[in-house]
Length: 116
Picture (spheres, rainbow, N blue to C red):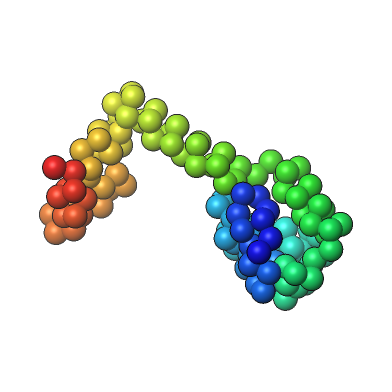
């Protein structure tokens, strides 16, 4: 296992698939990173040299991508701010109801049951 960006990446996986396991990097961003560095989609993690790993880290740091713990903190702060200003979404979050307009008549019963 290789430990990059606060995530353990399996050595048997390709770079494209392994980067998708990093919180905040999806399919399109992973493809873009591989394309920028000139990596083949099938290139495995264990085939990377130290220079390639450093280039990978420098590219991710220079592209100002919010990932891993920073992204988790940002999402948590946003949720707390919604609750603090008592917006509709914040009140729904407090009561344990769906936040994004889903119906509650037939669905979301487990969320309501767990709150009480």
